[in-house]
Image (cartoon, rainbow, N blue to C red; front, side):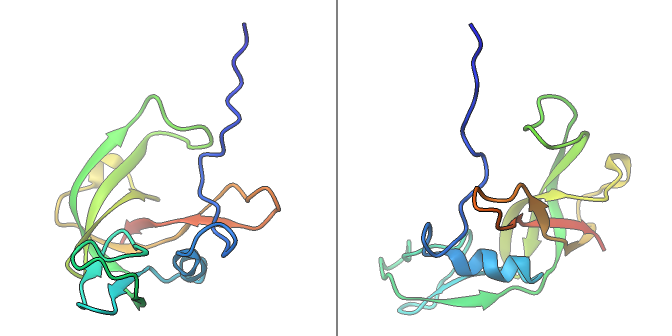
Length: 142
């Protein structure tokens, strides 16, 4: 029996599919953004439609600096998701007081180190079913 996986692994980014579409719009423009609660001021990662601290659904968009440092990382050589070449470096990046799980691109695994500076480098992934481009946050060594 042949099993065909028809699930789209990437998010639908339009306003029709998510109220966090502004995150993807800014990412496509080369800016990493997140939400700040309009009630208590808490900065959230990942971006949220409501505040985990006070429960408010009022939020403002805040651009992050785009520059961070590697807090931790791992190298994946086997079992990569479809469409990703290996080896792939995944990292937790400290940026503006937040910790962002992301992919490192243009990074030689043997030269990566905790504390190393990185810069935002949004990664274009497969277009959505209507042909619109989609993006994921990624970083590269600074």
